[in-house]
Image 1: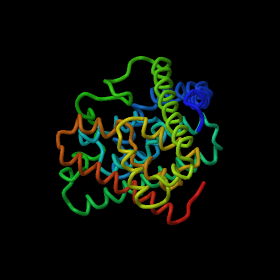
Image 2 (image 1 turned 60 degrees about the vertical axis):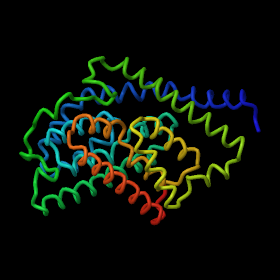
Image 3 (image 1 turned 90 degrees about the horizontal axis):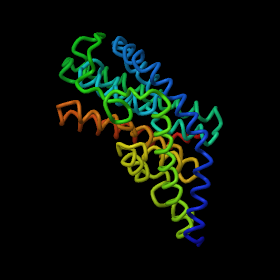
Image 4 (image 1 turned 180 degrees about the vertical axis):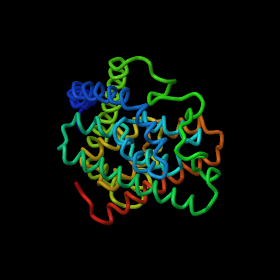
Length: 297
């Protein structure tokens, strides 16, 4: 087994080389989020029955910020439950910047984002269709006035977990870069230590195989309302310790701080719990089906 100092140095070097790519990626994403955020929210609020489509499309790109905004919009009954679910499922959180910083093939990146968006759309449309067929309207999660833009609920929260961001682009990008760098370093340190102590076979067989248990655990990790969850899951996939379906189970459930904001702004706690259980069930089921179908990228 390598010495602890050697493990720490290897983990640090593996992580620090990503810093320039992370910083550039977050600057671009902060710019997109500031420029597109209000337009995207408006477009989804006006989308009516097509909210799940636009929610899944816009949810792919702006990290967890859009899932947080979606929680506010749902609490104000501006968007439907299906649209909210589509956004949660498609939100890439920290997956996208890590894939970019690791210089993953662009075709693989688009394939992963496309799968998340398509699963989000399908689930969102099915949920809204079920609610409409039930005939209970806003009581079951449809907007009280479909297509009408509201204020999105009280105390709107941005993707960084505090009230509406007014810091510009560079400072949030630097802060986010440092946070994710630390998460990557800790994840790499833990992985290197486990591999050194127990071997790769132990890690691969612990929870990360294609069994139902692996999917259930990955989904539970994805529920953690912190970007560390998506960082860990993406890193395990890139290191080859996690199958595509297991990774998707975790990342589909991982909506960043969206669920945390939902519990802060939506007063119906039972409804919030049902939404989280639905998110978990859809994400894990989709991941299992991907593995059963032998999908790989």
